[in-house]
Length: 281
Image (cartoon, rainbow, N blue to C red):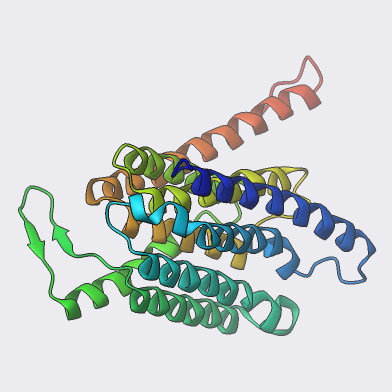
């Protein structure tokens, strides 16, 4: 069997589950007496990620023997930690709902779950081994430095994507581009496990783009963007060192494009609404 069969299948499963669960959540939202429940908005995303990672784990014995770096035990441990971390972050909107808790309580809950999820990933073996400053040589980190630096970085990278909260679709686009970048770096180096992780991220990002930008019926906010940020953080650590810098440069570029696009759409909408003889302010 082709080693890429498992990774590709995982990406397809992630995309399909994300779209199917989003459809079900939309139907539930219309019938629910509490349509503002934010946990429902991120349920398709976390469902797609969990389904994709589980599929990748179930098929890992078919491609792991050909993988350059990861053993079966290491791959399964990382997938389990990533799945649990996404579910923990999703649970914030269930345990700490918006109407009953203030900004400080919700913000603290988000940070706490991000730290716990990141610590679980570090325990599972996700970590930076080298640190390279611009213009300098690579420094080999000892185990303690590696764990602390990775934990801090995972939380910071997660919240970099959370800065896109409110710009609907921006977080999904950021993870989509990051996944494609990591996919290219992994495929050409026969890193099949990381190829699968990248394809799962791509599938969920594509699926979430449909339902979070479709008349903003299920906007990704709160735990939704936090989950996407967590996936982005995982990609930056697991990807090659050179890819990390590339992924970071994509965020401000995507943000600028989103803001420019929104401004352009606003100008066009204003011109269409105003009478012909009036000029916009």
